[in-house]
Structure formats: C-alpha cells, structure tokens
Length: 395
Image (cartoon, rainbow, N blue to C red; front, side):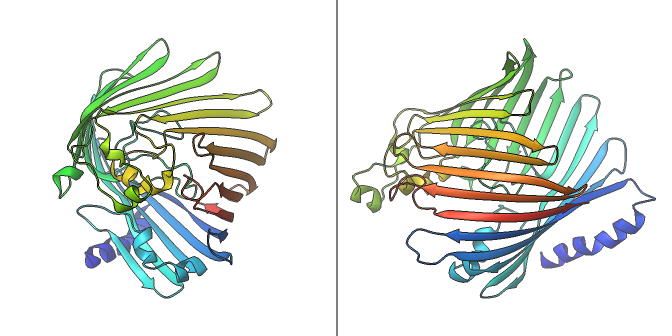
C-alpha cells in the first residue's frame, strides 16, 4: 500500500507537464493555522501550528468518463500533539478497505500525515451516471444538522476541512428531469453492520425540492424525507429520519453510576428532525436558525453518550439542540460572523465568532474562536476554549 501511495504521488509532476496537452485540470490551496487552546482540568493553554496543503485533480479521458484524485497533507506541531497519546490515530480518516494514508513522520511534538481522501471514476451517458470510489455523497438539505445525510454527515465545528469526509461507495443515478432523479448508493464494509445500502427519489414541486430516502444502515432499516425551498424569500429546509430501534442495549457501568440508561435502550423507532431557516437582508445582514430534535436524546449527562450517539449514527446525543447565526459584510472584503449552539436541557453552549478578510485575490485571512461552556458532563462543558488564526492561499 505504501508503494501504491508513493506511485500516485510521483505521478503528479507528469500530470503537470502534460496539463497543457491533455484533458487534465487541477487546483488546491495551502493553509497555515495557529491555535491556542485551554481544556478543562488543565492549568496551561496549548499552542499549536498546522500546515495544511491540498491538491485536487480531474482527468477527462472521454466526454463520458471523469476521474478524480485529491490529496491533502497535514503537518502538526505543538503542545496538543505532545500531550495527546496516539495523536496520529486521532487525525486519520478510517476506511474499511484501502488505507491510502501515510505517516510521513511521527515525533513527540510533531506529526506529518498525507492521505488520499478522494479517488473516484464517474461515467455518465444520457440520463444515467455511475460513480465508483472514494467520494462524498451529500443528501442533506439543512446546513448544520443533516440526519438524512447518512453517508457523510456534516460537523459545523470542523471549519478547517471544507471538503468534508468521503466514503468508499458505488453511486448510481438516473435523472428523470432537470432537477429530479432516482439514486441508489451502496457502501461496502468488512463487517455487515457497517454496510449502508440506500436509495433516494428526488422531485420538484411548487418550487421546492423534495427527497425521499429508504435503506439499511447498521443492519437497521431507515426511512427519511427532506425538503428545500423558500417562504417570502427566506430559505426553509427540513429533514426527518426514522430508523429501526437497536436490537441490543449497551450496558455501561459509567451509565449505571449516574443512573442513566443507554441511547440504544429506546424500544421505539429512533426519530430525528431538523428544521432550518435563513434570510439575507438587502444590506448583507444574514440570519440563520436551525433546530435539531432526537426522540431518544438525553436531557442530562449528555457528554457521557457522545461516542454511543456516533455509533448509532446520531448527530448529537442531546434531546434538543438550537443553532443561531448572524453574519454581515462589514466591507466588501471583510465579513463578520457569529453563531452559537445551545442545549436547552443542560444549559451548555458553544459560541463561535469569526471574521474573514480577503487580503488578496487568492489570499484569505480568518480569525475564529470556539468557546464552550457548561457544567461537567453537559454536552459542551468538557471542551474548553480555542482561538485560531488562519492564512489560506488558493491556486
């Protein structure tokens, strides 16, 4: 596998040389991210540095066939690396079959990691399209929480990975109209419980996009519905996902210690609902509100259930979550933004203010903070605060 990765990387100079003569295209960026973080139960702040480079390539051998190869390289240095056991394993993206990542170095306070996070071929003929390989399958319509995005759910707090994670899958799409289609996707896995097979039917009526999904995930049936449109020029989106209740309850001594039962002890089908609305005023002031509801979500000690929620495919272990965002163009080159996520049951919250500045045509500056607060074991009470500064050059 290391030889395969090296071979793919060595091909890039050849691709560049042929870019003027062959149907080949590329783009990417280089970013530097400075961070300073204070975690709960620690007396000092951790300072870290991240160099993040990405190269996206496209190959068009015929009018019907497209190939993609996208790499990203991350070099971490700092106190979080030094004080986090197995830091390298934390930054790896887990895939079932092809491990296309390589640790370039792994030292006490520094780690360098290169990975291929997109590698796919797409064949399109008339109204049919088939995509095979490592790709992003985005089904959700909301912008913060996407319960129907069962292959690649979003994480709004992961601001430095714009492309979002991908999945190894087979995707078949048949377009029944300009904005309507039928789709079938399959994600294979070594373990049957990790496989996903689902279909989507997308239609458009009354200037709204409607999506109906059904399938199997974690050996449990699921069905969902989503929409996207507007009311009086304000965006209005929503998603509903219902899935079979887990057939095995997790027994955890920590849960019992706090007199809590597991998320999987819910006997009825699991239901997740997200509603989203946004509006941009003529003066560029932007407002966005979103709500997430889990019928089996927890109202206390939410932090204890974070990993179990992830294993169940839940976007949050909380019963209710509320998102609120405000943004405004201070000048044509400077934009300020502020959003918060609030758990109304346990009172914990995350506040994320940011400001972006277009320094040059291809050079952007970002200053952003992530401030978490709450009592111990609440949803956001265990994360502390972090401040980031980032420079990004795109090509």
